Image 1: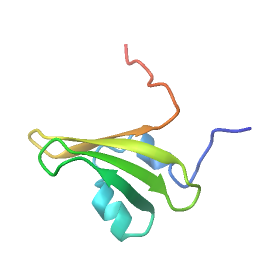
Image 2 (image 1 turned 45 degrees about the horizontal axis):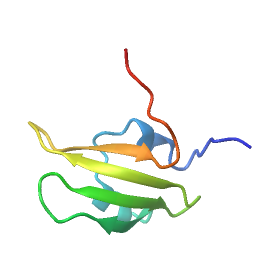
Image 3 (image 1 turned 30 degrees about the vertical axis):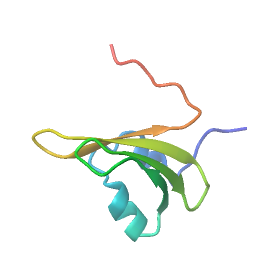
Image 4 (image 1 turned 180 degrees about the horizontal axis):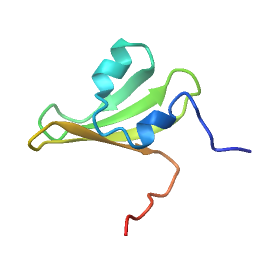
Length: 78
């Protein structure tokens, strides 16, 4: 069984991808969010393949989001 999901592969490294924009475009569904604020967490589901992500909003000089596929281990960057 392959872990390839072409429909949502761009989210793996897409730190500029706002989950709200993706939901408005119909590509994902926001299942759950934390309390609104600068450091929100989202639970996301791809509308094509049902793959789930945990998305953490990161405040800084530019707002960005860390998309982590659920059920996968994070890769360490050396």
